[in-house]
Image (cartoon, rainbow, N blue to C red; front, side, top):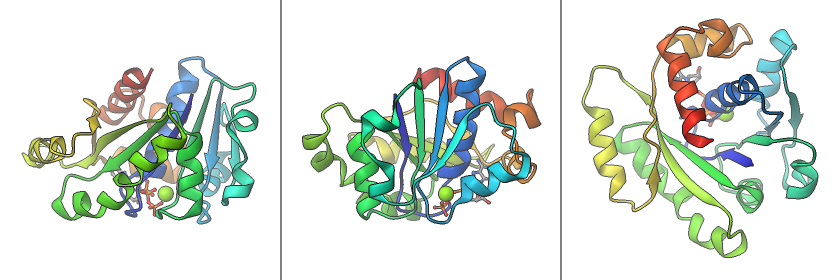
Length: 204
Ligand SMILES: Nc1ncnc2c1ncn2[C@@H]1O[C@H](COP(=O)(O)OP(=O)(O)OP(=O)(O)O)[C@@H](O)[C@H]1O
Ligand SMILES: [Mg+2]
């Protein structure tokens, strides 16, 4: 399955989820390739800290480098693509080959509004890529507040699928990233790790 993390809005958690999801699917025994399609190269920087991950990382920061679905998904169970915060050619190329496009959205009106342009790409993309499913994911939710619930109600009016899983704002995500790990190895019994395992279970 080709799973992409897309949202033109920056800083919503695309890279954090891509890295942790790749680790979680590997932990479940799947072969995984993690594709850094962001010219910023954030995944590459994370990878270079430890460099002992149970999956390959490829840097494909342009539509032509990304290639087609067949060559990308060859000999691997899952490809995770971390998209840049843009809706240009590269993001459209990513959507054209995705089976599942995950749109992480922080639960604030500003973030919800600025994700609309990304979401508006989906109907057109589906005409060319019938297999693509798109799903919103509430991300960076502040624990102990009502904003997650309110965001869920607001997002339901979009008529798009929404993950039941939610990713909260947790320091373990930042600390794991700094140490070049995923939350699954950095803090295996943490709430952050549980949230990622729950998300990967829901995807599978
Ligand atoms: N669930 C989370 N809890 C705490 N911090 C988080 C969480 N998700 C992301 N962050 C932090 O927020 C910042 C932005 O996250 P990240 O780089 O994953 O977002 P992004 O959508 O990939 O950004 P960009 O659009 O610039 O590529 C980083 O400093 C990251 O460590
Ligand atoms: Mg990123």
